[in-house]
Every structure is written in C-alpha cells, then in structure tokens.
Length: 140
Image (cartoon, rainbow, N blue to C red):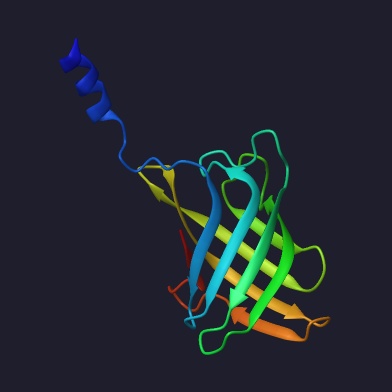
C-alpha cells in the first residue's frame, strides 16, 4: 500500500504552485516592483468566484530610496477563463499586463509582463514595457 501511495505522489507535478498574495518583479531597467493582492490568487484559476482582484503596486527605483505606491485593480484581459491579467490604477495613469509562464500547459506562478506609469497627480513616470523578446517585468 505504501508503495502505491508513493507511486501516485511521484506522478504529481513538481511545478504546481500554491496560491500567492505577493509578486516580486525585476524590471528591464533594474528597478523593483511588488504587487500585493488583497486575497490569495491561484495562478491556475485566478478568477473563480471573483471578477477583479484588488492589489497594491509598489515601485522602488534602482538607484534611490524613492517608492511609488498606488492601488490597482486586476482583471482578466479577455474573459473569466483567461489567465492573463490587466491592472489599472484606481487613481493615476497605470497600465499593467501580466502573462503567466506555462509549464506543461499549467501556470507555474511565474509571470512576465509590462508596466507603464504616468501618474500626473504624483508626478511619477515609469516605462517598463517589453523591448523585442525581453519582457519589461519578470515576476515570481
């Protein structure tokens, strides 16, 4: 019996990820971005029971201690079955896209994407958009 249970456990995918409440991202320019969600998000089915995810976005510039913080709302890019996420600020000009990295057809909990901030109220500007094949953000 123990051998049967062990054989079944060995067959389970190693890459399966538990839900997350925070993504830490490195940017194309070396700055750091943190996205903290108000609830646990399952990368395989982020929209089950919800149509939006409230989150806090923080950008820390590489060569300074300056922090930019704002509230964002994540939504699916195309529909409730879509794993791709779009984030918009509740105030200010923020444009965020996150795409899950798939392993064997399943979301691994790692994301790539891009972020553009043009917040006129706080007079802050960041451009972490993808260039060529290099993503603007790499998150996990």
